[in-house]
Amino acid sequence: MASETPYDPLYLEGIRHFNACDYFESHEVWEELWTEYRGEARKFYQGLIQAAVALYHFGNGNLRGARKLHGSVHGYLEPYLPSYLGLDLVTFLRDFDRCLADVVANPEATADIPLDPELLPEIHLDPSPT
Image (tube, rainbow, N blue to C red):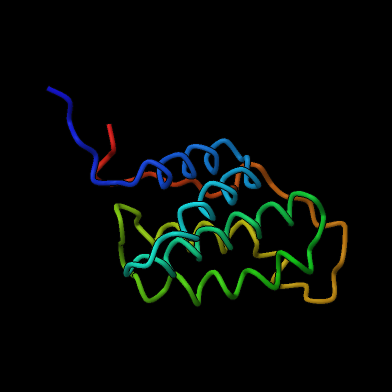
């Protein structure tokens, strides 16, 4: 007997890419889900897409792009607090903010803020999809 997961397979695939720090691919997968989706989770998926793109920009040294998306991530995800589709958004946003803290705190900086791999946020779902 196979157990059914309550999560969309594209949601889970995007999470796998996100946790592997393949932010571009997680964005692509989630965008595929978001494009066709018309339910209450639409803006939630959009917030995850924006988080992935912000981290992608940060990793490539585009601090302006990362900074711009930081605020929009909060705008999309905060209405779903404290938890949505198995994601503890309080923890996720805290970790996301911690990772981007130097970028946000230095609005004039355009380079030379390194991404600290120890601060990268991860997504762990409860209940777990396995």
